[in-house]
Length: 297
Image 1 (cartoon, rainbow, N blue to C red):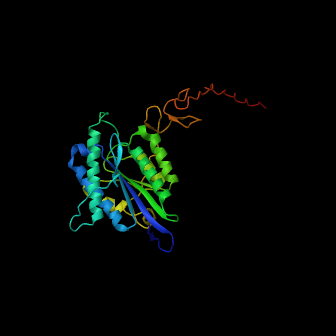
Image 2: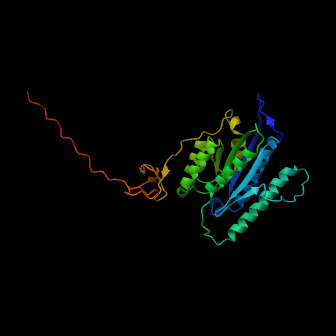
């Protein structure tokens, strides 16, 4: 494997980008204007090809996150598609575009034919976990001495749900340990939990003001790698909402009760922890010490 060397160093370096596309049909912008999904998909494909165009050693993986399951969109598992090259277009770019669109169509068709509940949530936490497993496998198979800059870009218009709070925290701290950046591009609403993941891993969080300029935001903010971002003036992170989600109602809370054994968070006091079943002793009221009487002289 050949790779480019960093400036002033003899260490070979490559970059691995994993893009997670949320294809849940119940996203608000898709329900209002279904054609926006095609526009967003074309912008993501152009962004992915721009990443490959930067260096010949760059690697790309695209994952589709649906309401019921996740799947690899590129590279396609098994035999690759027999794609005929388009005149004037680099054959790798043609392969990326055709493979992503073909695999995405299969993902949507198989999910719609399923008998599961249609109003499911996007499995973003599970898809990020798949990406981390792929990165760990690539690092094990890499050439000794090769430096791999790995990062994950999540593009979603869904709401982050507190029901996946534990799964989110697990993947965030796993990515931090593996030194993997997690970037988030929100297409609709502010996502507090995913913003926490960006802050924990050192990634970037951006809520796109308008979908018409999605490609410009992707190229301007998320195309540079982690070491290069330190030299650029990027949008500020802003204030991060670090509220935790209670384990009983899965809602974000400001003040709550924490189990001293398993650190589970609850919005109301319970004598028994529902997670580890620890029984707490309820102490009585603290005795009030009598005030000392002043001595009369």
